[in-house]
Length: 402
Image (cartoon, rainbow, N blue to C red):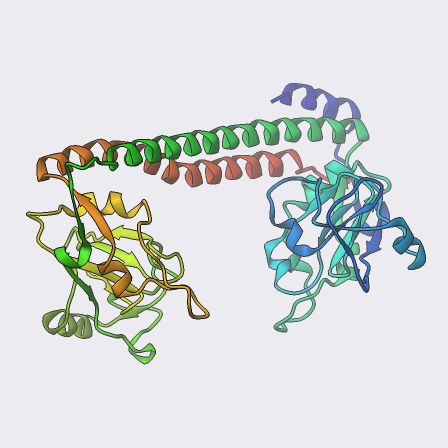
């Protein structure tokens, strides 16, 4: 980082501090528009049209849109598109909590749930970086269920206005940091994609057999089992034993059952053994998780497992084969679903146990490479974000001229 150059500029242009001004004194506010209709797509010669949902990406600049407004429509409605460099953010509803802020990369329109601010006496990118450290909810009206931006309070918020030379240098430093971080994250994502493809290649290669291997239906190997039904009133948001529903399967549980109920049910109803492969029958159909044996309970009929003889088929071999999604999913109803009969009629190849173990040994190594990177990626992103926020806040902290 070019902190030494920034220090020199501060000593030269504002050694005694900087002036603070109200946001309303240095920007022009631009409300969004309520269009009766918008065109689909993003064509040259038209104005990109953004909705709050379009702001969910992590990019600083808004470069592409799913909708557009024609010049004819804009003129008819007397709509003056916001200029390039306008900073936009949600001004109403739960989306305010997301604190999303973006910069328009070209003349654009946006809907009336979005507020735009046009920098007049301040560098637009400098203002964006400063605002990125401010929570929109600090300027929300009241405490109702639907928050909205209190524009007057926001306009009166004091922000530092260092000399333009200092603003530009801070923007250069933060742009460089952002670009380096983005490149690193993209490289990690590319590496993860490559590793997954490598795993899939060897999985498909190792699990493709000729005529010398026996194929059998899973129903010939074992039986589908599931936990006893848990009623909503038997769960709580805190408790002793995590209860996994279809929405939390393979993630973090958000419901629990008591230890007494857990011990009662596992003593008289089916319960998976450590190593059994749990299967999702709705939602992300066919998603499979190896049961780690820790006290947990699972939603009946939506999360099941195959109870079988491990001397014929080892669990981890089943897990890897399940990744091929061999199921015939029932789609006749309104919601697609994997029924027990779909599972039991699924045919799989069953090589000798020694070959199963060899295949598992190879694929486990590839899977571990993917998992290590999958688990490391969010941690790396979080660490980089915290590092960025630290330097951003440090660079944008100024003492006021007395």
